[in-house]
Length: 119
Image (cartoon, rainbow, N blue to C red):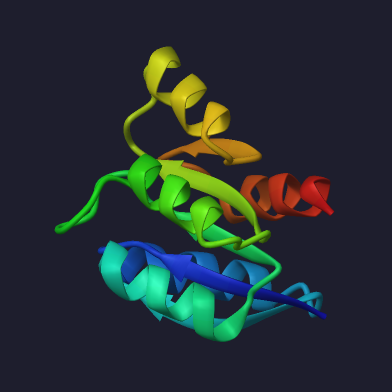
């Protein structure tokens, strides 16, 4: 079972992502964080296989979090999940270590398909 960390300031989004991924039986949610700082701490502690990362958090921007995680040696696959869908922002996320970028809103089915594709 793949370990997943969800980093999003919206409880609704964390719940949606958690429910969709756990329902497959292939993913275990090892943590949920509402801030970038907590997300980094949890990633280092839990060593997840996958991190879903919102791009706009109260304390940090998701792309900066991805850069810091990579600098810390975190090798988890990262899928950015954000309402910000401009091409340059998507390209920046991928250039800095995210494997995919999913624009909100999306369905649970699309989320699971994109996550499955990463593995």
